[in-house]
Length: 312
Image (cartoon, rainbow, N blue to C red):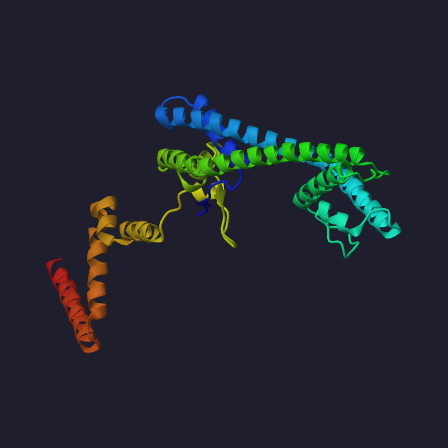
């Protein structure tokens, strides 16, 4: 027999609940699923469907926003790296003292560019660059050009804005995902409760008809590996071998019983029955007794024939 298994995706759970409610709306006569369970299924379907819709909406918004965020991230990283390169070349040319790199929180004994592969690093280093350049100018330094700090700050602020928006979308998506995950357990419990009522209602039916009826109500069945699938022929009742042998033995007993034959054929067969019984008895006697009885019968028949001649 196949075994049932709960849905393993959210869309499969929604299809199962819809199938049960759709079949309930078409049923006539006795209720397969109780009305209380139908009301629970409707409420659960609406809440779960709405929650999944909000989660998918937030997830799609996050994916769309992430594409724009990556473009802004690349621009901010490009302008910040170029500004640091210009600062290093100014120090090499002697236009700016090496000690001024401390204002940018950069090591003065190296010209390496910080690793901007992470958005968090870019936020921290970008803030140090903007504040360091403003402090150097306040101390009387000459502003750097190509790119200017004003243009760097524009791309840096745009990056921070998109990053905050992206983090907000990620939090919302994670919150809805947590709610969906928490609701899956209650949905599965409700599906088990509904399936139990459906299988209990169709339990008196034959196997194939019972399985097909339960499938129409959204129950999901799986066959084990190598297991033969049910067919309509499995519902046809087959006579048991013992019943068949008993019926045949009864038929043979009625046909072969000489007493029943004699009763059905009438009094004309009484002599035949007596002769058959006599022959059967003689057959089971020993050989010597059988021969003696046979000679005795011959003598009796000879005496009867002589008597009949005398009376004539």
